[in-house]
Image 1 (cartoon, rainbow, N blue to C red):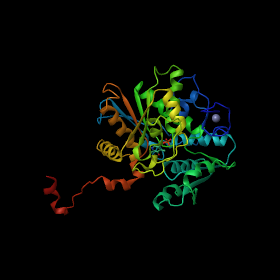
Image 2: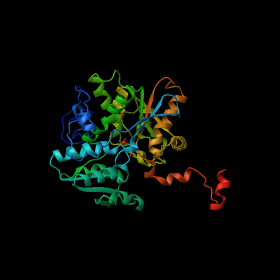
Image 3: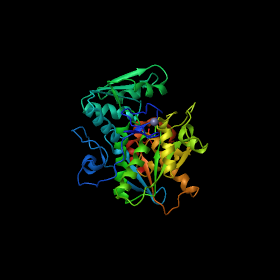
Image 4: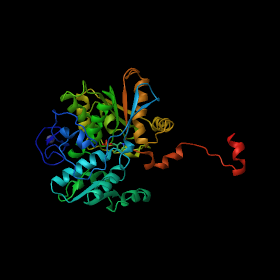
Length: 373
Ligand SMILES: *Cc1c(COP(=O)(O)O)cnc(C)c1O
Ligand SMILES: [Zn+2]
């Protein structure tokens, strides 16, 4: 593995010299094999073999949408724990097992926590989920349900990510560890098969792990001669917590911590993305785009998706809100195809429904006939 910034070899997930994320080597030769699971199909491009931990993550549908012309939705809510995180959790666990770890953990209160808890249970590993002290009770249940250790930590939650890396006998499978990125590549592999190729791929971005994996996947398929070009990758964030987009717009090389993050898109509310600088570097190098959207635009996109049968989290709707914006300002023409990554299910965050302003009718059973006619 090598540092993404200075290229120095390293066995840790962050570079001891510059503290930037480390990544596994590019795999530039191979082909898609016949098979059912992604481990079978993409064996040439994945440095891991499944040992019965897979719950058949991935293989999610790509659905044509009518919200915009030439818009496709990659429905990641159909993963085992209802978000794309499962794709990277399994590869990160396989890597940890290969290195001899018997204990795993993560720092998260959301989809990451649920995903690591589920796969930790499936793999029969001691699993530790570190959450902030102020976590609401309803978020603990869906993590604790898997029978793992949930530990409330009093202190600066932002520092917990870096602190967790100091425990040498627990593999912390945090948002941007190298093996997790390898799993996220499979989103790019599947899109390449489902759409031949996409012109734009829009990714709701927080820590930056998923977007790094998706770009790496497209680069590998391009270098292996499987796709004719690398799509333009779009980093989409919520205006109220857009560390990466802000840095890009200010012409900075490094992200700056957001002091008071404020958005309905809770799943992407990381004020100091650990892969932020790397996302800036790589996307600039590949002519990527950086877009932020308001809570109003997010909510509208979320409602539009629901009206097409897809109830996703506000964080996921950020991708469609960004697509609308890029079409509206003519950055993307109607002829060019867009894939939006719908990262996680709306059922994870039903409190948002208070903002949907829906109505229900109540009538007596005897009046039902009259009412429906
Ligand atoms: C984790 C998550 C993201 C952001 O992914 P990163 O790898 O942290 O950039 C986006 N949407 C949802 C629903 C998530 O759970
Ligand atoms: Zn370095």
